[in-house]
Amino acid sequence: MKSDRSHALFARAQRLLPGGVNSPVRAFKSVGGEPFFAQRAEGPFVFDADGNRYIDYVGSWGPMIVGHNHPKVLEAVFTAARNGLSFGIPNPLEVTMAETLTRLVPSCEVVRMVNSGTEATMSALRLARGTTGRDRFVKFEGCYHGHADSFLVKAGSGALTFGVPTSPGVPKALADLTLTLPYNDFDAATRLFEDCGDTLAALIIEPVVGNANCLPPRAGYLQHLRTLCTRHGTVLIFDEVMTGFRVALGGAQARYGITPDLTTFGKVIGGGMPVGAYGGRRDLMEQIAPSGPIYQAGTLSGNPVAMAAGLAMLELIQAPGFHAELEAATQALCDGLEAAARGAGVAFSTQRVGGMFGLFFSNEKVDTFAQAMACDSATFNRFFHAMLERGVYLAPSAFEAGFISSAHDAAIIEQTIAIAHDAFHAIGST
Ligand SMILES: *Cc1c(COP(=O)(O)O)cnc(C)c1O
Image 1 (cartoon, protein in one colour):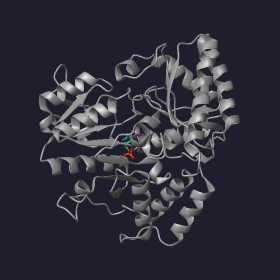
Image 2 (cartoon, protein in one colour):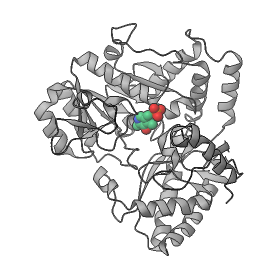
Image 3 (tube, helix red, strand yellow):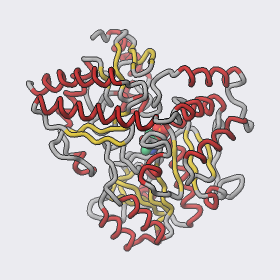
Image 4 (cartoon, helix red, strand yellow):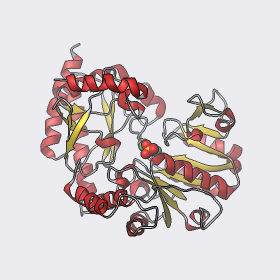
């Protein structure tokens, strides 16, 4: 596979961008080697600067749920762009977006558009703190909620009380306010809420974890958290930046039948443009400025071109049977990969929820962060490169979920499984 152009671009990039990239995972640090540079993308494919074609299971990390460059989305973008790229004045598409969102996700009675998932989660947390008058909140090991200071925190050793910053630059004083729980552990959540539930402004969770590989919730787990939050007056925030419109049309909350107080969105909602949103109970959301005192703003929020892209995509995924087909394709892919791995004698299992999936180099079914961390990431890395060389692009880390789109038809899935068959044999015999 040729890589001269990508290699030259990466050399130039490394001189001027930290690590050669504008977001860390893209640098291939976890899997080793150098990233390729995308030139264009179409349907299930990405083409790199050297003309190589890859079947893409990253889909821009989630947004491209109808495949790359869908003509309907492009058309909507071109039409909106011709009318102006940005106004900083209310525009009609924002109203349509709010109507669409609140209809598809009924727990969101009122919404606010922002420009990224990070903005959505940091704003939702401020709202929870502002309405409860409490400073501490709880998150889960392995969940990612964007890069705001309060979320770049992990559990301190032994103590639930004090979090530890996971990045220099996060003030210790702020990290002290972030508590961390193990995902899918019922008792740990019960104990924490008994201990200090009345001091917690919010509990924020990825209802299906997609940032520590893919970990579905155990039966009754999300309901358990809902009950604890209700009992203690803690705001339940579902971070559906990844799961929203992907694990079901109405997101994880529709799939599992749980009503959170606030929800955050990103990725699919922007159709590939930089968009995020948060929404929820009217009494909470109306505390946001200018209807309430809690401040949050954005020069480009509700951008007309971004709204047009998101609306076009949300229109497409409302086609009857869209999510059932997406889920069937994910299922077929995962079943095929498991069979191929078995054939090659490689310890391997999968998880799948709607249009997202996880690949685990382990013999057991994985659904906790500790189990995910214990998987064989060296073997994943070899598999990643074996697949890439054969024209399949997986997320360049053992700890990221995979994404499928409606452009991944039966032939593409079959082709992927055949390639995986070769790749598993190649890594099994080294
Ligand atoms: C991607 C992601 C974010 C951050 O969104 P950005 O648009 O990258 O800021 C937050 N939460 C979850 C669950 C995500 O997957």
